[in-house]
Length: 396
Image 1 (cartoon, helix red, strand yellow):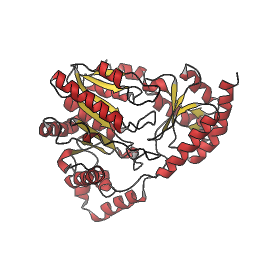
Image 2: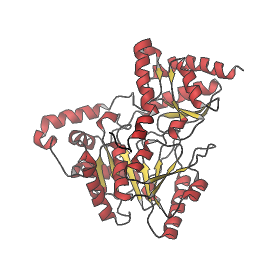
Image 3: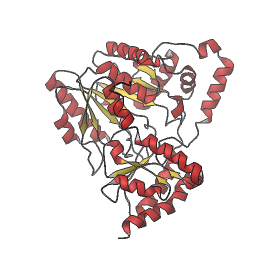
Image 4: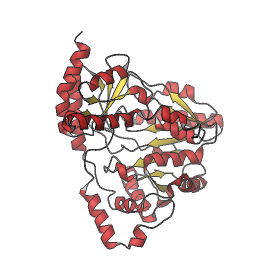
């Protein structure tokens, strides 16, 4: 018999993944070009050619025993140094390879951080709307998720409710910037205010509160939006990153955690996180893709591709009368459902072969998420169907 911990996951399997599977079924039935699947953040932009060139050169030039062998649980030192040097040049930080741990994507990175920090009963605060698997990650270590209510006016962090939800049991806080699912970029003003509250509460409670900044969309920011690098504002910060979006490598599962020297007891924390990386079962991040990304730290995402999609979808939907948050980052559009039950709206959209994810999947009912990391043609072809959907809901 399966464990009691797993039974709720069977009952509440990811709505996002379920929608993705439904999209594949509909594509087989109606034809892929007649299904408009905005459910999954799976980049449609190919990985930069530089990645392929790096992999080929590594396989041609390096000793295969080295390429495919074990390394330090934290990852290859020269890979971590290349990333640290890149971060220092871009953000004015002073990291070394010792501040980085290579991980199996950002999900693994967050688990490494939580395994390192959380004792049973410790509280971890998240801001709604949020990626619901945060709750599963926190539960893996018998932590307690505490949810901050959304600010539905701006979808910046609701700092008033956040301050109310902090307690002596608070061990960590998770933020995600640029934000999935809303596409909002948390401003420097917001981050400074968050850091001030955390600093005050650390002093009041007499123990560290760690800020985990989940940043797989860091490079995807539009209209001049600046994504604050959070370690500059709050000492007890750990940054979690993935190359899934910036280099279109979601299936390669490669990312890293940054633990600055300013983190309380940083030497022990880094050592513990390195062990957590191993005993979580990952052992280390995949070797070949580690070596490849080290050669591609300066590669850039094709922002123009996503920007064209962003503008086409936002302009099209708002022209039909839908209310949307204008995306500043990531590749998601957050749309207010025209009816209180957004799941009914999602179901109605399927009649037009449009697949969206209900906001309740992010602990924020009344909204839906659309991932616009699809082909431009998908957006153009979907817009007439969105027009029909709008007519159905607004004609009264």
